Amino acid sequence: MSLEVGVWTKFSGGGDNCVEVLRTDDEVLVRNSNRPEEAPQRFTHTEWDFFTRGAKLGVFDL
Image (cartoon, rainbow, N blue to C red; front, side, top):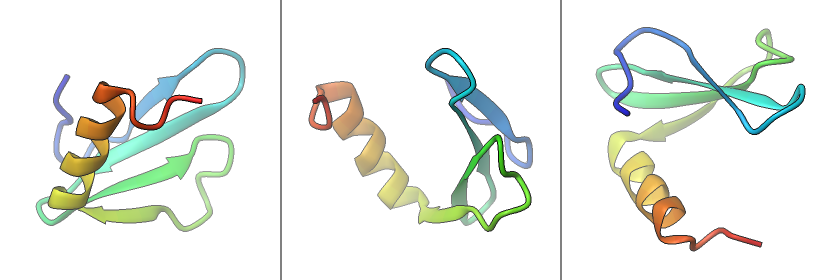
Protein backbone atom coordinates (compact mmCIF):
# COMPACT_ATOMS: atom_id res chain seq x y z
CA MET A 1 0.00 0.00 0.00
CA SER A 2 1.32 3.46 -0.77
CA LEU A 3 0.29 6.58 1.09
CA GLU A 4 -1.56 9.34 -0.74
CA VAL A 5 0.03 12.76 -0.27
CA GLY A 6 -1.92 15.02 2.11
CA VAL A 7 -4.41 12.41 3.33
CA TRP A 8 -4.46 10.89 6.83
CA THR A 9 -4.65 7.09 6.54
CA LYS A 10 -5.83 5.09 9.58
CA PHE A 11 -4.29 1.74 10.52
CA SER A 12 -5.83 -0.45 13.19
CA GLY A 13 -4.60 -3.62 14.83
CA GLY A 14 -8.03 -4.11 16.32
CA GLY A 15 -10.01 -2.37 19.04
CA ASP A 16 -9.61 1.33 19.68
CA ASN A 17 -5.82 1.46 19.24
CA CYS A 18 -5.22 3.11 15.88
CA VAL A 19 -2.54 5.24 14.34
CA GLU A 20 -2.90 7.63 11.43
CA VAL A 21 -0.17 8.34 8.89
CA LEU A 22 0.10 11.30 6.51
CA ARG A 23 2.65 11.70 3.73
CA THR A 24 3.81 15.15 2.67
CA ASP A 25 6.31 16.10 -0.01
CA ASP A 26 9.10 16.15 2.61
CA GLU A 27 8.14 13.83 5.46
CA VAL A 28 5.75 11.31 7.01
CA LEU A 29 3.64 12.27 10.04
CA VAL A 30 2.27 9.72 12.53
CA ARG A 31 -0.35 10.43 15.20
CA ASN A 32 -2.62 8.65 17.66
CA SER A 33 -6.09 8.60 16.10
CA ASN A 34 -7.64 9.02 19.57
CA ARG A 35 -5.67 12.25 20.09
CA PRO A 36 -5.49 13.99 16.70
CA GLU A 37 -5.01 17.41 18.35
CA GLU A 38 -1.58 16.40 19.71
CA ALA A 39 1.56 17.04 17.68
CA PRO A 40 2.44 14.12 15.38
CA GLN A 41 5.76 12.34 15.22
CA ARG A 42 7.71 13.41 12.13
CA PHE A 43 9.96 11.26 9.94
CA THR A 44 11.89 11.93 6.75
CA HIS A 45 11.03 9.70 3.81
CA THR A 46 14.35 7.89 4.33
CA GLU A 47 13.63 7.25 8.01
CA TRP A 48 10.15 5.98 7.14
CA ASP A 49 11.56 3.70 4.45
CA PHE A 50 14.03 2.13 6.90
CA PHE A 51 11.30 1.70 9.51
CA THR A 52 8.82 0.03 7.16
CA ARG A 53 11.52 -2.28 5.77
CA GLY A 54 12.42 -3.33 9.31
CA ALA A 55 8.77 -3.93 10.18
CA LYS A 56 8.29 -6.13 7.11
CA LEU A 57 11.38 -8.16 8.09
CA GLY A 58 10.06 -8.69 11.64
CA VAL A 59 12.82 -6.61 13.29
CA PHE A 60 10.34 -5.12 15.78
CA ASP A 61 8.38 -8.27 16.62
CA LEU A 62 8.03 -9.04 20.32
